[in-house]
Length: 252
Image (cartoon, rainbow, N blue to C red; front, side, top):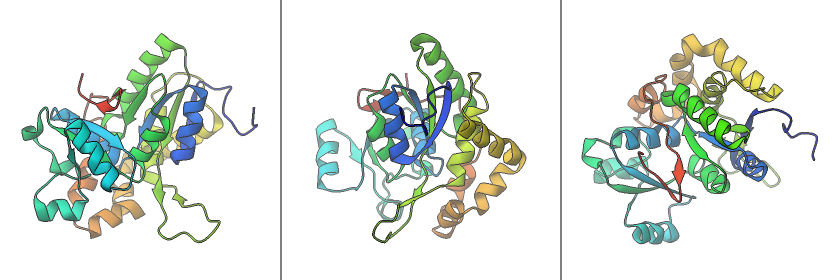
């Protein structure tokens, strides 16, 4: 067993696709956190009764074929969706009119992590919007299965990494979202999880302002999606916790 694993603790945190795969190989219950905005959009879409099929990036012919196979709409990029009036990774693109509709959602971070970790005892979606509910659901599943819990902060991707460079960019919005969930769990926590919780508790009272001004928040704001940032930084707005059943997230 590699020394850098957090095996001896019941509650852990990992980063990105590699961390998601590591947690899946341990057989952990996994909570995937992508605040801006895969996780937040899935939670919001399901609150309106939509069904979300995650699929790894990029949005290409294979993704289009998959959407056709499951009878779903393939989500567009934010800019294209605004132009065409379709759905996207923006939570604001969903409404009550989407009840029972099916959507395939690709994203560089959230969907990629889901795909890497989909064969586990339980895979949940967590974010600031449902932090307390996600922790409660994970603990219920832990009591039933005896499995540990890993909260995966998805992070972002650097553009155009040079040869031999790692392309993951830690995103503080995901780290704070993971910390919010971990702070509600009762099991023993790894040092990595404890530091994550500490970051969240330190910024809890200013969390909306911090994410508003961080790199990911600023990027969305400059692209015209300020309302997405406001929405995704609300704490415990929903009690709904998406859980992957087969290949779909649907409201149970």
